[in-house]
Image (cartoon, rainbow, N blue to C red; front, side, top):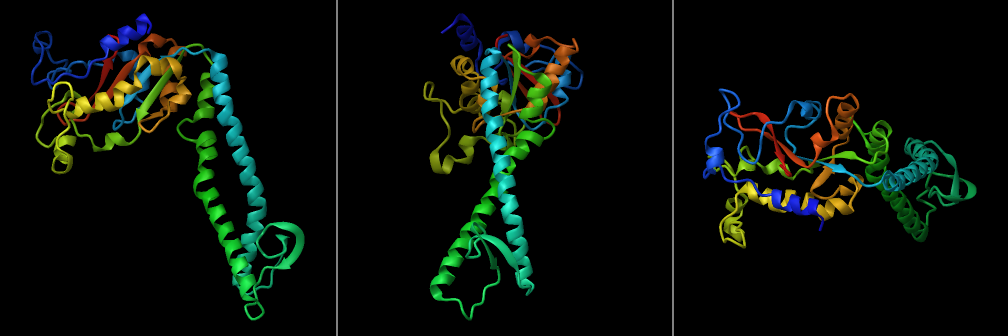
Length: 325
């Protein structure tokens, strides 16, 4: 492990419970008359981060770091999803050219209109052997065998088209047209650089957290995972100290620590860091690079940090935890 990795491991410690502050933090003063001091290890974000903070969602937890992989490697990584989504678009266009006339004919058939379509298999399924057939079904002359075959064929077609419309079509739409930014617009505006800012955001799991979780605060109304499941599985405990974990410690050990592991960061470029816990914030990455290009910040201002919004009523503010500080 490199010296940088060792430094990160030594610096990245879980938040301390403010109910037992260290001497160095117990005498800190509030940045404003109406707000409590920033609880360690968090501090006030510097003004250079304001362009990024303006784009962030208050409900998410964010991690920023610098991706220093070679730009050629990043080019290869982004090329794969681009080609894949282009293939999906071609598939959808091809299927639409076949399916739309077929479903339109079915609608006319329901209205009692005799409908002739150019069909593939010659059986009304909507595919195949270049035959013109009547889409209407005469149940008086339809045999059981043909009825079963036709039912299975059309059911398969409906299911196939449902999967395309419900799931597959969303991939290229989000990839090319997602808002406020998407992978294509991110690469178009930022380009390929040897050093790039990566902004990751929590992927929905933060919804069950309550104000004060990030500092291990035992406020009234703060729901702890151990207390939620105590009847079923008992409280969450630290295997080393045999003490019950706070919510903040759980979030750190189970969500944040694996995401800032030096070996993980060295082996993954930004676009490959999407997983069940973290998503990429393309709008945040574009905003951060725009601030750098305009001379309002430097790339090191965005290196290795956890950014959260303190949602408690008496302290609504952004807080930053500099992992290497």
